[in-house]
Length: 295
Image 1 (cartoon, rainbow, N blue to C red):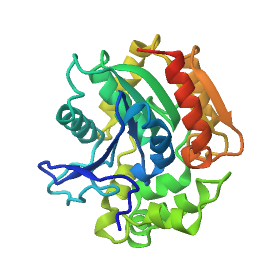
Image 2 (image 1 turned 90 degrees about the horizontal axis):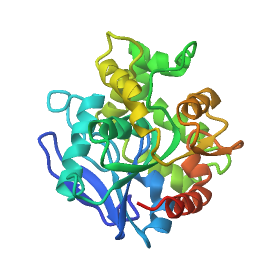
Image 3 (image 1 turned 90 degrees about the vertical axis):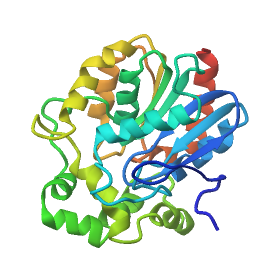
């Protein structure tokens, strides 16, 4: 039985196959997950929205049902993720300027990947929904939580993530708080990351967190940080879990500072996996937001 509740699709590439969901017809919504989740996170949104919209939801290389190549075949950097997205959208007929405009629905690392794509192609993105994510350099004075610092910078952290699956297990236990995961949901979140080799991307995402100019992805993040102004007039909705220990309310405040016209919905009792905690509500809010801002 497939882990995904939707028909699987695969795009072959030089590093292996990228899995993606492609459900419904109409204006396209591109949903991008982060780490250590996968396209499964968006199942309730896709089920709700596919009656009116085309929902495209990829698994990043190394994540979910996508192939999990070794480091000799894939770079595992932010830039490589954006390149993958360009290739997928081109394959689906959604990359050209003449294609239907995109709505982005972003979570965690998906925010930086999606907004880096948007900065490459600002004319393609017409609406943005951002959920517990960032697309800018860390707000001043904000330190990386020790759990992420341990995974990013130490051999012990690397062993905990790849050897003991600590990052995925911790996320399943601590990131959905309003609606704690059922055993079946927890098993689905964890299933793609069932071995040392299959947890490579989980670790590489943590190691790719850019904190300074010496980090590989820092130039990309800095450029996106500077180019976010291109989207000042783009309709935006922020859906935020108030009990996120990484993307806490200081990140929400930074989004609001940069985009004061954004529609904001804060779920005080929800965690980092706000889409898991408040999926039906976010689906309804997204539908209303899209209807209020036609393209």
